[in-house]
Length: 64
Image 1 (tube, one colour):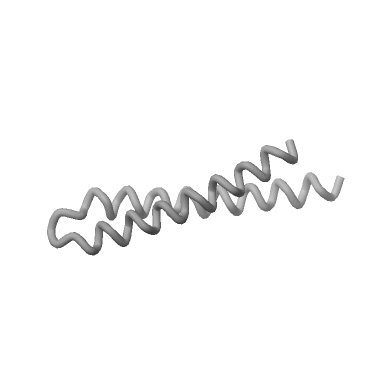
Image 2 (cartoon, rainbow, N blue to C red):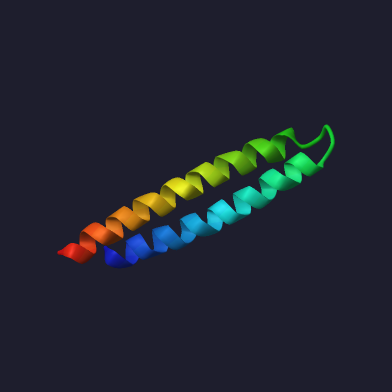
């Protein structure tokens, strides 16, 4: 389970980075970037949540 928390944290950080990049690309496109903005924002939020959950899991499992 400790490995899962590490993988979740790493995937969450990667998803946040990709989401943030897509969000920026969506804002750079004039008028045609609503899809990219929405997908980027959702991916960033999910990525941050995955990082937080993974870190909490890792800290609780490491204490045992």
